[in-house]
Length: 132
Image (cartoon, rainbow, N blue to C red; front, top):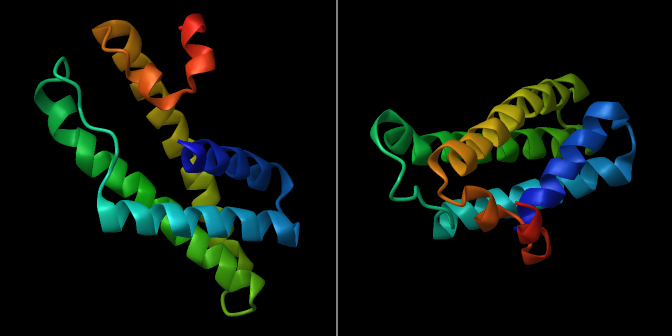
């Protein structure tokens, strides 16, 4: 959960003006670690029982695609910081992550409200559950 929210924060900060080396390295480190943990151990989230049809079938591939995009952007930004890759490629992926992350959030809000399956409870700290 910490990787999820830290990475979301870093994407927002990079989008706003991420020419700071420490910010680029923070994003790259969390993204690469998160991607490696997910690819090595699998996703922690699963589709709930109320999720059916195409939404259920798309759940896992959609999340893996998003995590692989995070990993790719992280590798490109780290490569740009080391002078191995042109800086623009990682920046484009950050913009794609902004769009994909927004769709990701809308999807989970839809699940939480329309299906009433408590999807946001699995992603947010317990302190926030009383507001859901």
